[in-house]
Structures are given as C-alpha cells and as structure tokens.
Amino acid sequence: MLVLSGIAVVILGFALRLNPLLVVVTAALVTGLSAHIDLLSVVAMLGHAFVANRFIAIAWLVLPVIGLLERGGIRERARALVGRIHAATAGRVLLAYLALRQLSATLGLTALGGHVQMVRPVIAPMAEAAAEPLDDKTREIVRANAAAADNIGVFFGEDVFVAIGSVLLIKGFLEQNGIVVTPLQLSVWAIPTALMAFLVHGARLLLLDRRLKRRGAA
Image (cartoon, rainbow, N blue to C red):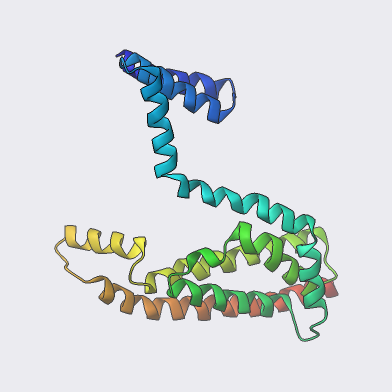
C-alpha cells in the first residue's frame, strides 16, 4: 500500500495549490522510493519518460508565441487589414474562415486553426473591425460567432478525413453493434453532413450582418 502514497502527495499538493511540476516530481520520487527503487533509478526513469514524450510539451510553446505576437501588434494589424477592405463584413469574414477551417480539416490539417492560435489573435479582431462601430455586447456576439465558426468548421470537416480519431471511434462503435464499415465509407458519408453544416452555418453568418445592422440602427 505504501506504493500508493504518491497519490496522497498529488492530492495534498494540489489541495495546497503548490507548483504542479514540483508536486508531480515529488509524487514520482515518493512512489519509487516506496517501491524500494533506489533514488538514481527513479531519476533515470523520470528522465527517460520526459525524453520519450517530449513532443507532448511542444504544444505549450504555442502559448508564449501567441503572447509575443499579440504584444507585437498582430491584433491591430489584423484589424487594419480588414479595415482597408470596404466590402468586408463580420459575416463575410467569418464565412471565409469557416470555409478555410472546414476545408483544412477535411485534409487532416486540424491544427491550422483553433481558438488560441487563430480566433482570439486574428479572426475575432478582423470580424470586429469589419463590424465597427460596436458596443460591448455586440462585440461579444461577434467574438462568439468567431469561436462558433472555428468549432463547426473543424467538427464537421475532420470526419471527412479518413485517418482521424473520430472516424475510428465511430467505426469501432458500429462494429460492436454488428455493423461492419470501412473508414473510407464513413468519410464518404460524412461529406453530405459537412456540406449541410457549411450551408446552414454559412447562412447564419450572413444573417449575422443583418442583426448587426439592426443593432447599429437601434
């Protein structure tokens, strides 16, 4: 039972709101020593696990990069770019992003968009600039629609790509219920759904412009 003492360390450390990295490393050391593994072997195992899974930490590099880009004025430049396009509206900007996001997802490039990478620093400011002037409540509506365009685009687009986790999950579920299909068949049948989703949400984005005009007139 002493081997499970590492769990108690994790619970206590998180309850006291200590540094998560320090808590996890301490829990690993306590677990290893409780299992009668010498200290050097435990440290070696930690180092091996970090090196073997170092690609997982790459995703965290996105956050400081986005922070530096925002500090460098990427939001302002995105707003200025759209401001020079007289035909641009919030609905049209988001419709273009919806098409790009869904098309890239159908090709398996789901990481090209996202709320952190694209919506907050680029897409939302562009849509806001196209809909100026805005009050605070209307600005939140535009931002919500920018986030929705990203979600809908990737959700309905990724199933068209044959080698995606959701397709394999659907395949496994169907096989458990006696329905045998191939991933390619699922991808083909996902195309009509993706097209319908694009048409429905695309219409909603175009109607967004009418809503914004009414709010502006009011």
